Amino acid sequence: MKPAVKHRFLMLGLLGTLSAFGPLSMDLYLPALPVIQHDVNASATLIQMTITMSLLGLAGGQLIIGPLSDHYGRKWPLISGLVLFTLASLGIALSNNIWVILLLRLIQGIGGSAGQVLSRSIARDLFSGHELTRYLSVLMAINGIFPIISPVLGSGILTLTDWNGIFYLLAAIGAILIVLALTILPETLMVDQRTQAIGHAFRGMGELVKTKSFMTYVLTQGLVYGALFSYISGSTFVYQQYYGLSAGVFSIFYAVNGLGIVLITKLTGNLIGKYTEKQLLSVAITIGTLAGGVLLANALTLNNFWIMVVGLWIVVGMVGMVNTTATSLGMQQSGQQAGSASALLGLGMNAIGGIMSPLVGAFGTTSPLPMASLIIAAELAAYLLWTMNKQTA
Image (cartoon, rainbow, N blue to C red; front, top):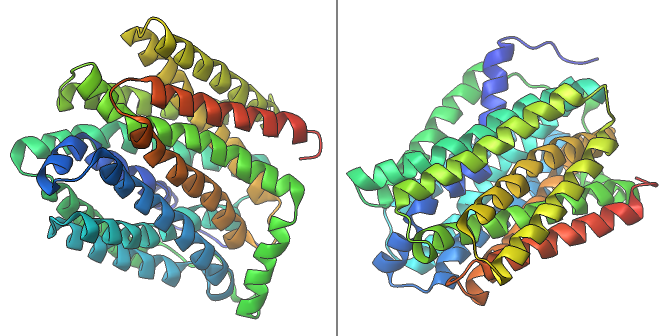
């Protein structure tokens, strides 16, 4: 029996915000990366490692919090993670040492992982089938708002104060979410639906890893996120240092790409019922791969700014369709292991994204070529994986 939900619209907004800890943790401070690099006297690769550490925390934390939530319920693991996120954000705001920042970014990611993994788990507790896909499309459209507003807000903060102020804001957001979670979020996993022993919860995750169809969704989505984070990690340097845009103008282009995620995610929800999740996933992966190829060809030849802008908009926008359909298909296979399934989906996204992010800096930030090369590599790998396995997924 699905639990009854009060304050449905408020809870939808809360879950959408909780699912957006990736954008909240990264997009808000992207315009400040060159400033942080100067202030802490670190290399571009080390600065991009602040993205990687957050992603590793987001990935690793989900592997713990997901199974724990299958045993203890959703609410208190979520609140514990929010407290950790808030304290780590405050610590970063008070630091100017790159090594301390890297450690706290890892801890911040672990705390933030609770919001990511449990927003999906709570949705699975409440819905199933096409209804779950439609709900996830709304949830992820809310999620997609944050890449639009975050860099604009981040660049605005930089006009008023230094980059530390961005992390004070993240700490404040974490504190607000703690209050909202305590007051309006119900427990959605009833006691009789929980795994009876904590060991069973972790073994259930192992069974999911052995399921080829489930892991196809995990890895396909993860590789598309690898392309997304190649863009996230490289775009601030390409736009600002190679093409000479200011932080404010960069944030506008970044926001437009975020709007693409919102629009494509909303379109996905509207198309469900007319087309299956698998059909939409195939279309999104194919279009993303073609756009990645255009980006690489442009970087090797014309280096035309507007071709790059359009290509990136398509690549980023298709993430919305991949995310909605792959998450729904994966969660529908979870049975009573929704927390574990959500954790593995999150692991794929954040771990592969974390691997790709520093590679942009390692290969160089003085041209669009490293970013474009990594985007097409990830997109092509996702396309090949899905094409070879979609019949059995």
